[in-house]
Structures are given as C-alpha cells and as structure tokens.
Length: 168
Length: 364
Image: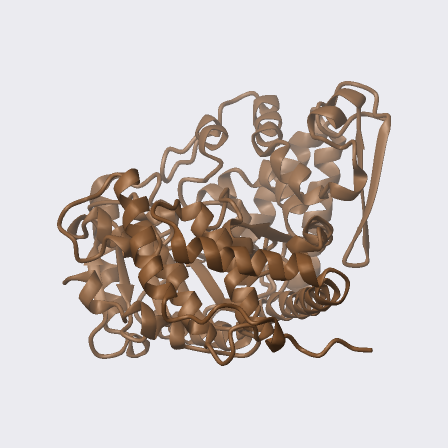
C-alpha cells in the first residue's frame, strides 16, 4: 500500500477516524507520519492532514500528467499561482481546474455537492452539461495515463452528477 | 466619518447580553460571496477591483438591513488606529485591516451587521449577536444575503455552490463561530482534551483574533471548517450542539475546582485582583489573563452584585487601540503598559475585594 502523502514509500501507519459516523482512513509511510506529527493519534485531525497535504500537489499531478501547464482562459490563473497562494483566481477557475479540485475538495469537505442556499431562479442540483462533458474528458485522460485514483474520484463525481440531474 | 464617534462606547458595547453569556461572549455567522464575472480580489486587476468595490459599497450601504445611517468607508480613508479599533471590536478581520484603497467596510449603527468589501472575497458579510445566538445570527445574515441578491449577481455553480477564492469556503461560504471564555477548563487542565474532541468533529478552535492567534485570557473561538456538502442550517445546528456541550463541561469544571481545589481558585482570583489594582506597568497579555480570572470571580459571585459588563469593558479598553483612543500621540509599548496600569488602578477602585463568602454553597 502506498503512502497517501508522498505517494512513494510503503505505508506503515494506518489511521482510522470516525467523523460524524463516517469512517475515514489514511495510510502513511513512517517519514510522512513523523512529519505530520501523527505520533499521538488522539491529538490528530484527519482534516488538518488532508488540507495541508497537498492541495497543490494533487492539482499539479493532475495537470502536469496531462502534458500542459493549464491556465484559466478567463483570468490567466495558473497551477503555480494556486500553489503559491492556495487561492483561485476567478469563478471560471473552478471548471478549468476541476479535475485536480475534485479529490482535494473531497478530503476537505463533507461532500462535493452543494446542499445549501441557492439563488432565487436557480434549480437545485442541476449539473450543467458543460461540467459533465469536462468531467468525462478528464476521466478519459486520467485513464489514459493510468491514474486510477484520480479516475475513481472522477467516476464518482460523474455518477453523482447524473443522479442529481435525473432527480431534478 | 470618525470611527470612534460612530462606535458605541465600550461600556455600552459590553452591556449587551444574550443567552449563556457567562461563557459565550458572542456568536457570529459570516458568508463569503463573489460577483459573477469578476476575478476574485486577490487576482483582480485594479480597475476590476475598484469597480467591484464601488458596485458593492453602493449596493450594501442601501440595504434595509443596514439601517438609515451605516458607516460606509474605504479602508484607505481610515487611520491605522481606526482600523485597529474595528479589529478589537471583532468587526473586521486582521487581514482586512491591512487593506487600503479598493477595499472597504459597511457597518450598521447597532453593530450587528458588518460587511467587508474586497477582503479575500468580494464580500464577507457577518452578523453578530451577544451570547449564544447562532441561529438568530444566521437568519440575520441570510436576510442580508437575500436582499443583496436582488441587486447583484453572485458567482454560483449548481454543483459547487457559491464560488469563493479559497476552496475551503466553497459551497455555502458560511463560517459559524462563537467566542468562549473557558477559564474552568484551562485551570482543570481539560482544555486540550476538549480542543482535540472538537477538532475531531470537524470544528476548529482558535485564539482571540482568529486564525493563528493565541488564546489570551482563556478566550477561544470555535468555528466550522467544512462548508460544502451540508446545508447552512445543518452546520449551525451541529456547532450549536457542540457549544452546548462545551458550556456544560466548562460549568462542571468550575464546580469541580470549587469543590476540590477552592484555595487554588480563590488564589488565582485574589491575585488577579491584587495585581490589577496595584500595578504600575502591565502588558496587554498579562492583563487579559488576569481579567479572565477576575471575570471568573464575578461569575462565581465573589464580587457581590458586580455585573460582568464591568470586567468585559476592562477587556476591551485595555486593548492597544482602545487604550489610546482619543489621543493624538501614538505611545510606544512601554508607554501603553504604563497607561494601561494607570487606567486599571483607577477602575479597580470601584470593585470591592473578592469575598469568599459569596461563593455558591458547596454540595454536601
């Protein structure tokens, strides 16, 4: 089993936490476990780890593997900018960097589908066709470069998006 | 407009009360929103940022929820001291206080709604309430958000919800928080356990001024971290439940100390009274920690009928900007420490010495 943080070494530290009745698991190698301060399992929050570990790393993997440095056509924001600031440039960035974001958001939040307030005039849970197309294209790329972890995340995202579209 | 004149006096500000305010100073709900089609403030070019600023200052200051005469000012129009006053009142973030032209604030007269324009997002709108009133604060800011949506269009995606500069705020853009005074849990050395337990529930515990600040005066902020995948009402309800439990633990910790280690408890309160009454130079940090014990003494009845508002006012007016408010000359740290001690000595004369007879009867 691979370490979730460095994705290189063999994972020897296995953490299981129950957050709101959901079991969450993280597997780490010894080095990363030490670095993240996972010597005391009681004082350790999965969220902290998942947030800190690599927002940028995940995004980078997704895009560099695709062979090009992606930048947002609307505002010119790049991968490197995200790595530097941890912020995005504009609302369009969320679609441009969707692939890397999906797994990042998964670790950060309770889900990736918004369940809160919606502006008057918007219909709940209708995923736009363009978003679905983008996710499917990303999925194809991920499969092509044999990044199956990313592919699985995208598959789940597409599945849930389709379900919402039907329910709406 | 002069911020000092606009704000209520520290005495009035501290007289506001609410449910559970022995332990919960205040409740706050903030929403992050961005205009559609305009880059987020951190990445926007100057003309875009200025345009967003003008549109939003105009729209927000005329909302019915902001009342007739809100304070609406660009950050470049405020002095460093004004900005610091707003930070000490918890009306603007420390990050926002660093901003200048192209950023601003709109604050209503009651100081219950405060909107930051061009902070990390185009809008950071917050509602504040004394004591534990998260739901009321949410309803208040929800109303502000809804009226504003009639005037401007926010960046929204049916999958991701409201789009924010930082992915950690995505979805609802909501941050629900309460400021707690937990001297009992600190004295009983249970605070770390509580913080760990709260962290595990997906909530963050921070110091007095939010992210990366120290828990001075045993004051802690508890807030949600996850904003996507849950509705606002669910988030508010979840935090509320956790806060009620923390309150119960704090109350128990106070009773436990009272029963098992009354001398330790009385010693802390008595020494706090002594130092605050007789010092001639005192740092802000020491003051906060001593005032925390003094407030605990008031809560426990050691100071007769003295209202807690008196002590809360001391918390506020011993902060650097409040301490120097109305003075033209800026003091250095040494000067502030002396001024703070003078002020505290004067104010402490009004407070009778702690009387152990006032302690609640110990259960037999």
